[in-house]
Length: 332
Image 1 (spheres, one colour):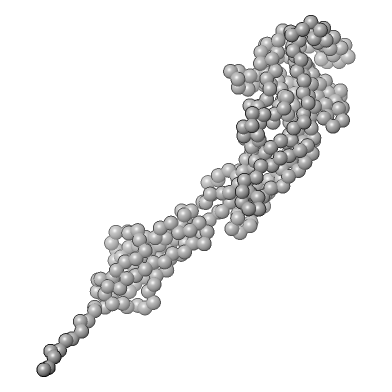
Image 2: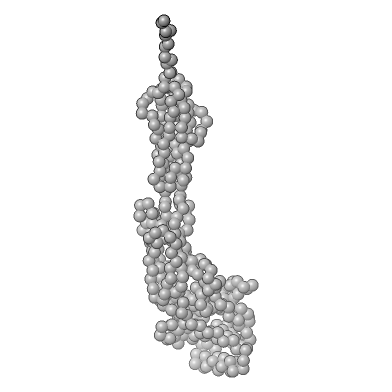
């Protein structure tokens, strides 16, 4: 990000104090609306490309308590020249946030971060502080969230945007929900490094892969000013139960015959198969030996890795006895 910022603390040197008093006097005379007692924070905000002042930029001065941004202490709007003035209740540590309506320019934390946690602190002393910031044209990210099996869009799923802050740490910046076609958008972004990911939904039944590029690997988006990126992320969403078949090809078998259960699932894969023979306890397994003569009943089903449970099936088979071969004495 090429945002330029300045912070001049007036209690460091006499010439700076004189400059600040002169600036405050100029603001009071030229802009009567700014003639506020005990003005502590003031500055300018302009466009990085042209240097022209930006009007109607909202400036929030946020209190920092124990190193953590807590609440907005003061708010101001920039005038036609990009000048703004805000009065905070006490000296101390603050951060400054700029918000531009319409998304033409990026929302920016002073001086060079898209997240409050990475913003540089502004120390406000008895003589106040002057801050100048230049805002870039905003970047944007559009994309779609799809079922990687079918290619169809997945609606109403949380999409999470994370940004790398000035400490090279990833911070969640914003979340949106995909529309009826699986599409989503993030706009008004600062230039920088971003990751787009899908959040888990209650209906998720198989781990998602996100973000992805053509070969399914992670993809960090590097956005410049006034740039738009398009990403596609997906999830292997399995809502279909597996199917189980037996090796029985006839209605009757000999005692001692082995029945095998064969399950298939072309998405998440088969996790386990269960059967119940003649009403006995449910057993995990895929084969059984039939020894009971007469009619036998086999109930069976499978479960896939996504947790989808097949509706139980039932087969009946008649078990016949094994006849012993007759032996005759050998005549000599």
